[in-house]
Length: 330
Image (cartoon, rainbow, N blue to C red; front, side):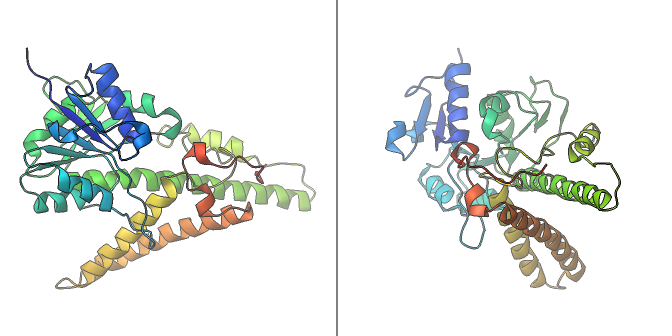
């Protein structure tokens, strides 16, 4: 009988705990034998020696720096303690390029980036039934990617693919592409939330205009959203502008990741300017695109302000939001 790959999980928050649950409850792993969980929060009672594992999932926080950039110091401190020869699967959202830089710094370890696309309200079901399972690798860890993928739940779209998993499609995605893709998912969600609110502004504006002109017709955003959402290319996700108890883009990830993505883009533009030839056209295009994202962010700030809120008040996991009466758009 083949011996199971020993698994380590560092950081038992929403993401890390779903990983633990998957291996312990579904894959039949046993704590202290072939599953080792560690978290610095003593209340969680996870103090296993994760260094005994062969594959170590790192799912620790990456909070924002004061300038909005992604703080990867906890990830780096954990990685530094992992022995050589291990496969390190970074689950934390990190700035694009982080895994490649870690691979360069620690050439005797094998680094993977496996982004998580969980929603807070249904983290477990999202984990066990994902629509995509991405194992982004470096050149060094390329041979390990399929082995890591085989440990995880099946999905319709996977990277890089395995011999025994049936999937809709597969493509080989490297670690940096996966890092960008993780940010892209949340930034797109943020933009779609704001687009819905802009449509609502227009609908409300038309209703008011008709009222001023004595026209007995109301323009309901909800009907527009239904029509838009039933376009299979678009879908209904993020079009409910009255989600929770406020309007706008909030939660733990959307504001944090939008700020980090803009900050990363600005840093990239500055670095490109220094290159030989200057990459002037690319820098101009990138800067224009970043200005669009900044405008979206500014709209969100104004929308929250209209409701007596600010970004700090809504930048929490949903179950931590203060349930207070808010101005809701009708």
